[in-house]
Length: 416
Image (cartoon, rainbow, N blue to C red):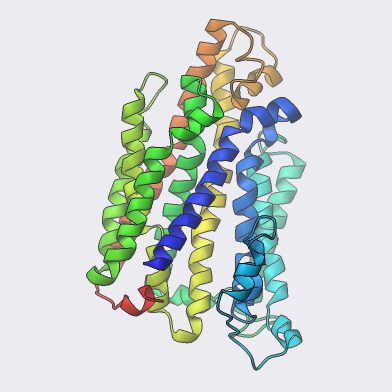
């Protein structure tokens, strides 16, 4: 239960980061401009996280784990507590520091990070900063494809690495259970990222909320999410049938996401709260259980790799979903706004600025008709983005139906 509580705290903190990023979007635009680069505000953290998860996971399996707690205290105040009170654990005392560094698949780690960063760049900037068919876009897609092929060959053929040391656990792809856990956990991460980022934006555009007010609107989601993360962590070792959690959770995500696809600028706040809560029930039920199930399904020597595998699924798809959602927001949003403003002879930069929020020239113009047109168009854009949540829920349901209907012993895993 302690691990579940710790994970819940981490999830809330990460969620708050995403929410804050959405809330300050208008202020960032006012200070710095460049509407086309706003998706990077929410994308930076998950992108950097997923790009370094596998190398960090390998490092955790080699070095004294206490050394990694240095990043927890904000200003070093809590550092003595973590260094002197947290138990020390050196998983490989037989190796020197030099040998431990040599055990990390640095080539694979660099290519892996490059793949994610390139994907985020090309998806985020295509259409808004440069055209999809521009030379820049084509070159980036080609380089991304080359890196993806290189990583596949390097890991599959064990080039400059070994079966034990390669950064990605390729043999996990032979396990139906682990692949389905990856897909389901990733879908939950994608749904969470979209709801946390775009719900505050919806309230800011349609209700005129301040950043603080918009953040408060997420409390129904966050509170319900925490409750069900902890409930799943407490009950799964007793029930044992993890596929049931994924099926029920997927249904709630699908229903909540489908209902979010129906909202518009006139939808009542209470209804949106309810749709948030339904999504939160599903996401909370399955957001963390993949770690315990993956560890239970993997061999003892593969436990650190199993945790890293699920980490990539969870945080990686948050980054991917935010990149895709940001591209939809910028491209579809601009198209809808341009169509809505047709005949007014407004410059494209002025129209696109409406996507920045209430501090943009469109919303500060004082023209009630223009503001209303912009609100309707942006609300429709965000409604389309919420279809990603419904799609994620559907994918979880399908994955759960393909999982083995088995009961596994998770008591040892849950107890640490």
